[in-house]
Length: 361
Image 1 (spheres, rainbow, N blue to C red):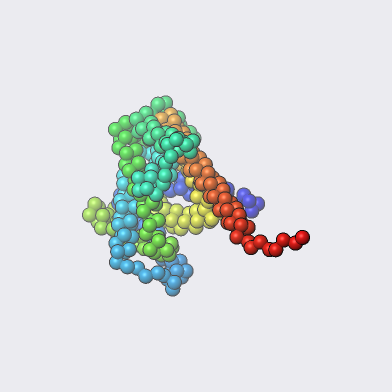
Image 2 (cartoon, one colour):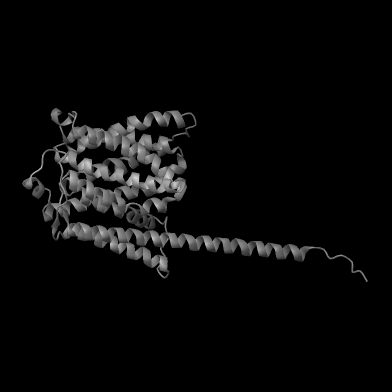
């Protein structure tokens, strides 16, 4: 059973993310303002993480310089505040299934951004390099298919719409028009670019501020302030800020506490046990869970374009990950070979340097 725990953990993580896409879409379908929702979500995440950060890392916290604070502030602004607001607008225009499908681009986008910032290397004449290029092309093709092509529609069993009772007109209304679909896909893709840039750039900031839990909590706190300013500017009606005992409160609590808190721990544990590639390879399960949840509970219609585009994105993801894994193995083998050659050379030099004793006749 111990060997199966990482596999169960990644399935739980991806199902949690699937629930996030579904509940976010349900809250927006119920009329909740996107900017207000994202503010409440980050506020809940901050309140949840702050006690743990103070208890575990406050006493041994590293010094926080003004320059590092500014870097963390802008990381929170672009990587969290703008990213989540753009994501919210995108999922309003699109569907939960489309949002989950485009999320498969994230590892590919992260690799491409790291490549531009010279944190990754792409060797065009190697098999691993060709696999990475093919993955990037497949990712772009999948995103274009999601945005441009619908195809036939498929309706699964719809039990009850989370934002109200369903009917035939409600089901048809959840098929976005071509123009709306393109807008949604573009915004969702843009939010993934910002998220990937956040993942890449925070590596450098963590070198100056290595307390990971305090680092994340500070970003959540700063993004809460930023998102409050954006929400106040965008929504002045006090009634839009009311939650109540409905899907709005459920979505805020789920995204703020379960997604931020539980998945943060589970992902760190899985990476420690199996490595980051193992976690990234489980990303397509989010699409599967979201497609099932949203079809049954949101009455969303699945299109052939969503399925084909999702398959292209998954194929691109695995191609890049395979190339990355193969390149890491080659580097490890070359390092071991170089270490063995160095030890052999040192041994030969030691043998030659040994003084020769007198010959016995």
